[in-house]
Amino acid sequence: MNATTDARQQFERMTETPIPRLICSLAGPTMVSMLISAGYNLADTYFVGQLGTSATGAVGVVFSLMAVIQAVGFMLGMGSGGVISRFLGQKRNTEATQAASTAFFTAIAAGFLIMIPGLIFSGSLMRLLGATDTIFPYAQNYAQYILYGAPIMCATFVMNNDLRAEGKAFFSMIGIATGCILNVFLDPLMIFTFHLGIAGAAIATVIGQSVSFVILIFNYVRRRTIVGISVKHFSYKWSMHGEILRTGMPSFFRQGLASIATIALNVSAALYGDAAVAAMSIVGRSFFFILSALLGFGQGFQPVAGYNYGAKCYARLKQAYWFCLRVGFFGLLVLCSAAFLFAPQIMALFRRDDPQVIAIGAFAFRVQCAVMPLQTFVVISNMLFQSIGKAKQATWLAVLRQGLCFLPAIVLLPRFFGILGVQISQPAADCFTFVIALFITSPFLRTLNEMIHSGNCPVPEKEIAGKTEKSEP
Image (cartoon, rainbow, N blue to C red; front, side, top):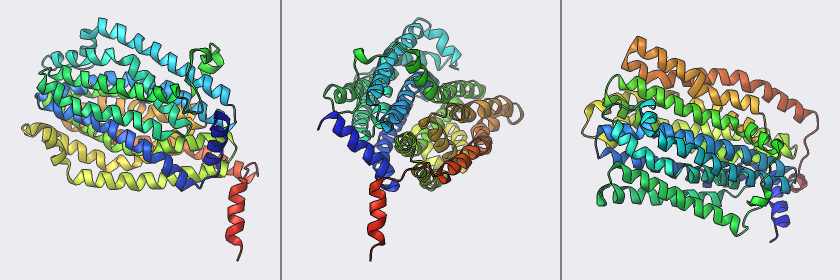
């Protein structure tokens, strides 16, 4: 099958397949990828937790550094992915290839820009990220290996998102899942068998990411994709870079603010000892695992949104949006209900011999469970705006949860409520984020209805044929 035929069939699939079946087929691999990726984060926390409370806290400290690397990778990956899906929806395949190539090589360069100063100023960086005196040596040891892997990580995030953007979520899943599973197996081997301690966990992470990189780029080398990656397609035009950055900026703000929020949380929790830092680190990693199910499902929606918006199939866009909201909310409600019931047991998995960590974390865990389902509306709306190129709305939604709402909460609430303020800062921020998101999203939904009712919404021929067949006696 040549690239032109593949592109035409993919276009028909994205604009004509019934929405529930299409989204579920795309969301399945992305959910597996996200859950496995989040699972290896939990595995790191679990195995490092066997080294002590300070080592567990170090994982939380370095997590904010990894969030910076992810911010750059996701900015370029989600940016190019959104551009690619819209270009493919408009049947502009050459421009889609230029977007993929530009983002890939820019990501590698950006990774080196993070790695070099990070290694030079690693000591000061760990202090800045909130490491206490006892956590500091573990954090510095862990961070240096993560920094070595920054270029590969950034490029891997780009390829992962670009494959999903053109509807090749299965290829993306294979690459990410293989690296993550390998990481989980390498963790105990590196930490305990080879006696590398916390450095072993970081080395396992970098090896896993490198394997994912090789598998993902193999799909491009073997030309299994619609778009390609090559130096000759790298664009020096600002219009291409600007469109990628404009589309991906919400992801940068979201991930970047997640890093700042983690730093602020670590600094606030450090006032109450290593147990508080370790507890909130476990809670954060655990909720990333729960939220990853929603993120994976939403990522199955993004190429559908981009393709159909580019093809002016606005009714399908609306249908896909509300389908994801309903499924995402009830799915998250089930997961959070189970987590609420077993919060102490979940905390004990990581630090069974430290009752203070369990007590602090279990309460924070349960409060977060109570409000987390509200994030379905925020996440799916953000993905909608980002996929269709509405950068302004997407950016506002991206900066709300971990920025405009959380940072004031983590600064103010502990002053009035002590450790309780640390525990309830994120749930309070989530409630405010939901309310503000309603005001941001509602105008566009009204506009979308007007676009549908105006008649500027083509119905695919296959869909018309299907309805005709069903109406025949």
